[in-house]
Image 1 (cartoon, helix red, strand yellow):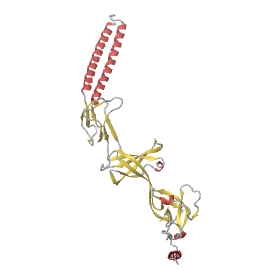
Image 2 (cartoon, helix red, strand yellow):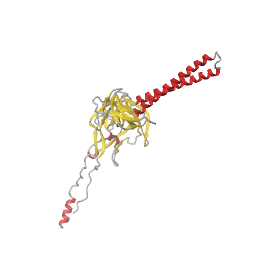
Image 3 (cartoon, helix red, strand yellow):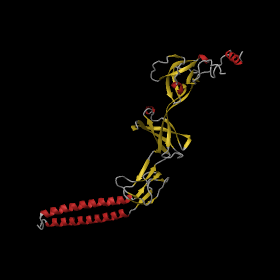
Image 4 (cartoon, helix red, strand yellow):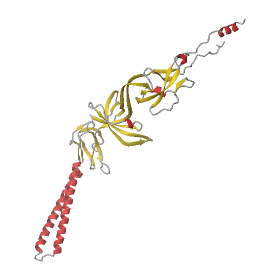
Length: 375
C-alpha cells in the first residue's frame, strides 16, 4: 500500500486534540469580600491667600521710590512706595494762597457791612445798600468754605503720594518699577498685591453639577499639587457657592476649601487636584465596578432575571457557577451604595465569597476537533 495513504489512515485513528484553552474558565472573576470604602468627589482648583489686597494709588504721578519687593514682609502702615510730590506740593501752595485771599475778602466785606449798619440810622446809606453788603458777605464766606475744601483736597492728594501697606502681609506681586508713571483715571492703578497671611490659604475649586449635590460644608478634603507630587495635603470645605458658571455648556459651581499652610510650602497660584470626602464606611461588602459594567458575550449560558426592570440604585452582576465546560452565569440584581469610582458597596443581593464576573477572556466553551493535519 502506498506509504502516504498509510500515514493518512494512522493520523485519522489518533484521538482529537483540544485547542489551547479548552476546558479552562472563559471569564475573569473576583471573590466578593468586605472592606473599607471612601466616596469622593474629584475637582481641581487654584490656591490663593484667604485675604488678598491690591494696593493702588489714587493720584497720577511718577514712581520715585519703592520700599517693598516680591516676598517682602510688611506691617500695616509701613511705607512701601512714593510718587513724585512736586506737582501736588505746588497745588497745595496755590490752595493755601487762594484760601488766604478768600478770607481777606470776607474780612473786608464783614467790615463794610458793619460800617453801613452804623450809617443806616443816620441816613448815610440806604437800606438797600445794607442788604447788598449782607449778600456780598455771604458770598465771601461761601468762597472761604470752598477754598478750605480745596486746601483739604490738595493736602489729601499730597498724602496719597506716600503709599502705605493697608494690612500686615507679604508682597506676592509688584507691578511697577521706580521711574514708571502711573495714571489714576478710570481705574485705580495697582502697584502691589499683598497676601495677608499665606499660613492660611484657600482653594477655589470648580465642581461639576453632577457632583455638587454631594458636597457639603465641613467635609474633609485631600489634595495634591504638582510641586510636591508625593505629598497629600488636607483641607476642609467652608463654602459651596450657588452661583453657577457655564463654559462650553458645562455647568460648574465654585467651592471654597480652607487649607492650613504653617510651613508656607504652598504658594498662591498653584493648581490643586482635589478629592472631597463625601462618605466613608468600614467593613462593607463591595464589588469592583468592572463587575457592574460586565455584559455576557453572545452564546453564554445565563440564568436568573437578566432582563428584569431595575429600580433606582439597582444593577446587574453575574455570578459564575459550575466549572470547566459547564460554567454558567447567574444574573443577580444587587442594590448598591457608595462608590470610590473603583469599587462599589453592595447593600443587598450578594453574599461574601461569591464569584462575580469582571471580564470575558474570549476562550471557547468546549473542545472541538480540529481539521486533519495537512500532508
